[in-house]
Amino acid sequence: METFDLTRESDRLALVDRVFVYPEEPHQRRHGPAGYTDYESYRDWLRDEFLYRCTFSLLRETWPQTRFHIDHFVPQTERPDLVCDYDNLILLEGRLNLVKGRRRVPDPCKVALGRCLYVHMKGEKMGCIEARNEVGEKIIRVLRLDSDDATQVRRDWIQILRSVAQTDEPLFRKFIGYPKKLPDLKRAKVSSNCRLAGLKQSAKYLADLGTLPEWY
Image (cartoon, rainbow, N blue to C red; front, side, top):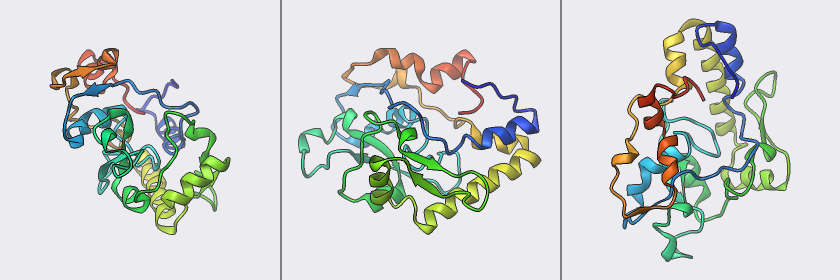
């Protein structure tokens, strides 16, 4: 992980350029809870799983007016037996979930989104998204990530972050860091968890140890 000193304006500005960079490797699930009969009960697990942001838009929970829905990779109508299967669940920005409907998108646990999608951070194309391959084309098409509205949202946030990086360090830290209130997954009541090691990777656990990164 790169090192940035958030007390330095130059480092804060450099960090802005990484906000809309997709991961270069497929996501590896670190949590594996089971036993809930209502998939909404998995919300805190999914929030921590996907770093409190939307996997496909990269909009964050700490950003105002950002709301998240729980979605199923395989639609409930096709596989009702997977309605409460944790590995079939993902956290999506509400707008994207409504746009997606019942259509499927590639599983970010099987494809590296950084090899599929690229967001321009500067110049005339700032905020525009491009596909790097056919998988990226499908993601953009299904979720309309290249719509005027989606592009403007990214452009607005790039500009906002650059502005606060220069004028308001505390607000920048809020926008670039984890939420203040983090779920304590160790206390969550589940019948089983096939990835217990993930509890020690959760944001709350790291925060209590004093090792949670200031940014991500």
